[in-house]
Image (cartoon, rainbow, N blue to C red):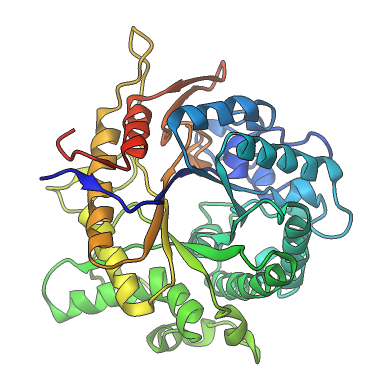
Length: 449
């Protein structure tokens, strides 16, 4: 293979989430989030760990910006902590919270790193959850208020804005399986949450358009799971179609087509949430870009014992696996070309892609994460293929900048380009980080490297 070159101006970055890195969970007027509550419930998190300190980014952000500069990042996508700005979710603003993000943005710009802002990455104010959270329609207006506050303060310096990260995971992981905060297990609530997230996204897009410069770009981040039948039978193909509906089309179709998939409406029947007049038009507010997160594929087979979905996932024994998922690089190409063919977004970014494998510091202080380098190389090769196939792909953000609190897994899963010793908060750039820096510098890579 020849050197894989990316287009001029391709945006190389990394991405993080506020709750996973900031720490300072109760400092400077910050309110409680649903995750501050969730981690204190027995049995929710491996080893009972919390993100009270996480990787202390709230205090160490200048050091972390220096690491970004050393890695050669062109851009950095970070989320805002809603309860850090609005401790009660609405009403009185906490000035110290806004001041922190002011300093962070100014620090990034001073180091020629373009800030991308994500308004919501799962840390809902507990005060709003106490009123029903995303399951209540009133949250739509609360979210719009929050979006306006952030835009008014940071809008003069932020060129790209994201409303939500992974609404599918919020709705299903947080409200159906209960594996994530707030830990609810109710399919009716989960579907209602999905709808309210999408309506709040559309309303926030409209709010941001009124507050931001006309040059600002607005999008949403979706985790897409390309889905394949386990066998070439009609039953398995239909099982894969149903899973694709739940995981992907339930969010893509309303955003880009202004309608929910008819087969999903039929499948869920009376569970399907109320759709008010104008909701679908609001959800389908025009977007400047879509961010796509890719980690894994789903191989599905027909399973009549699974309620509603009648499908179960198969894990091919010949595949390579991380600590969490199957590693399947061709799924990146399949996902990108499918999204382009079916939905025609103006611009696309890969906003999360990464792998958790056991990392450790060798005797000489280096972290030789060879599997992560191979993962990056193989997935970026598929990104390059997709660009050649005509996908308007403008950038790649690695998940994640540094090892952090990985939700219900606590600190066991390491995804970072930077190794963090959680006891001392020492940071060490891994060999994958050095490989990524070289790729950014050359705007491409040798697939044999």
